[in-house]
Amino acid sequence: MMVRALPSVLVASIGMGTLWHATDGVQAFTSEAARRLDVERAPRPVPALQLEDMSGQLLPLSPQAQEVVLVEFIYTVCGDICQIAAADFAEIRDQLELREVPVRMISVSFDPERDTPEQMATYGEVHETDGKMWTIARPRSEDLPALLKLFDVTVIPDEWGGFQHNAAIHVIHRDGRFSAVFDTDAIDAVLTHLEEHSS
Image (cartoon, rainbow, N blue to C red):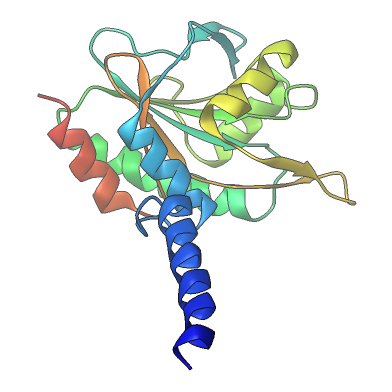
């Protein structure tokens, strides 16, 4: 009986060891949770990319003048998740206007061919972006793959000409490193994080 039990115990032990390793000590049970834990442990430098905003002007992705940059990824004709995320972003904007925290917010289009400055301006008008604290912008097409890889954004074309994609708020701290990820509706957590890292 003991001899038969040993292989089962061995298999269970190996399985637990694999689970422990794959989930960062059982702290991350999903790939999204693992991504967030990885970014927190090893912040990623953000390259000095220039984006084109909804007024056709160039703006840096990296923080300027000791600010923190919040980034979400969208495409302007998205009818569901982007609209919900934009409403959450707007709530963060409204809350930040009442606080003295230097923050810039960018909704970055991953559909730069169709999201022209005019199209982005229309999207921005719908969501009452001011072009200063919060703006809509697009990368150059050649910069897009590296940008999506840096932030671990998955974009999959669907059969209707749109995209399936993950949504989150990405934080670039004043040191120019991508260091934190939050759910789009984690408004209080984002605000708390910003206040903790603004001093």
